[in-house]
Length: 133
Length: 313
Image (cartoon, rainbow over all chains, first blue to last red; front, side):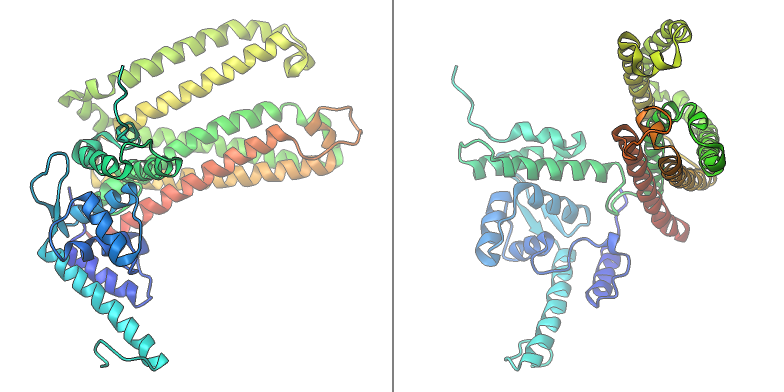
């Protein structure tokens, strides 16, 4: 099955995060901090997890209750794009781990979010954490 | 008998088979962990149904970018075809509803309504011809598909459509002589038996149309189309979408002009009497036309967007 290459996805994401809103339909959902793919990649950054563990972790660190349908919709998209991959099975459960492409994508997204957060912080006179610090 | 603890596995039916095969067990395991032996809540049922339908739409190539551009283009064209079939149902209803309207509309204000009606009829013929051209262009690919052993994958759909069409044909043949022996008033609600029989015919014709659409979709989804055929199909789909827009506009114009000059025709009341311009059946017909047109335009947009990527290689 042909999928959009990760490089293209990332480039698109960067364009979009700059609010150029180019080609909206081709984005993988890596845009807002509470987009399910971002939450899943963030959760998997600490190690492989299966669906239930992902759901619990996301609820704990983001306060977002992802339903099974939304969670598996995002897992499907992320796996199709090679940003995560399955790691064996635990009975009917299947843990996933983040791939190198997934780590790069997450780093890019976090960098963009941080850049925006820093601009906000700068304008509000709050302490900075990113490139402006 | 001891009841098996609910795990939400029944909800998997909303998802396409390929997705169920790949992710079904995991999703059921997650739901079992989440439910803790309780029944799935209505909210969970709705969210799973929604997610499953989205996966089906994705699998059809109508959502997302995971399918190759050619498949997405063709999915858009198929959406236009399905919309056209839905439009045919609405068009058939409009044709029946507007029978003999010229006699009810005063001669002085007849021109616009007659022009609007003729526009609907001409656009319907043009749309039908375009759909046929699209089918003929895809025919060699379809023959190759059959020769390469594709028949079993559409046989069930084909037989079902053929069976219902045969029943529809027999029913029509049986009703036609009866219709000729009735007066227009009896045909338009005066005869209860005829009305019931006509309603049954409408259901049969609609079912036949839907089943043939299923055959077309099942077959065309498996075809391998050349670049040239794909280009023709997208052009046909664009033109068919255009005819639907024209027909919807012309139907609305027809309704507006008849409502202003002969509202009694809309309510089938005495000529010259006061009558409401709103008629539920016509409103339902118009709504179906609108929905079908919007669906066609969405399919066309999908195809056009994917086309840019396809051309870029």
